[in-house]
Length: 212
Image 1 (cartoon, rainbow, N blue to C red):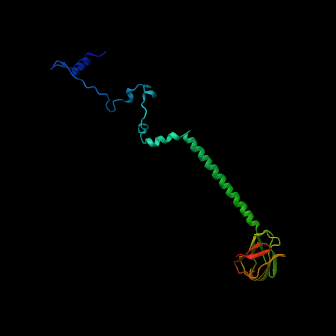
Image 2: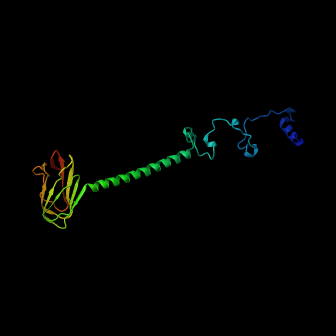
Image 3: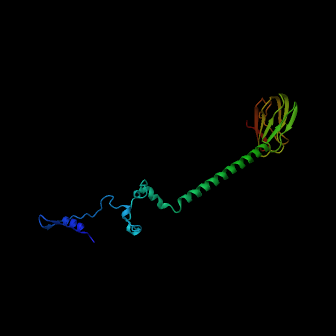
């Protein structure tokens, strides 16, 4: 119940003693800025159905998120952190698998490469038969040689290549021969190998062709 002081103050606002009439009061439909504070709102007094729709994102938290950024959440179907964790694990597993596969492939290539090389330490006036399936023949004599004989594979595959290298010392006179049943065109053979020299050949339909 209002006190006498309260009633007197109210009366002064409503009654004009000079004119002995009631004053015309102007009632505002809005509250002053910051008039409603947290202390003036009872706990659980503001429920979801009392909050207007269409609030801007700036009204949430510290206001640093725009409406457009907040709206991106409309396409999120589940926990965001969970999705990132799953994606991270997937990428990690893929990376590990890929690196393992590359390492295994390198090992297989190294194995195949080693299997395709025939290393020979030639001696003076000696000879070598290139083994079937070998694609590289490295000749590493202890010193320069005056003469050496090389015979190409007996059973080469069609399309097989053979590269003969001499990475250390020169061989002055080289005799290069095809195996029985095969031919080496005139001008395709080699007669010497300088130090660090090489010569490549390709087999096709019983014929060895010079390719390098």
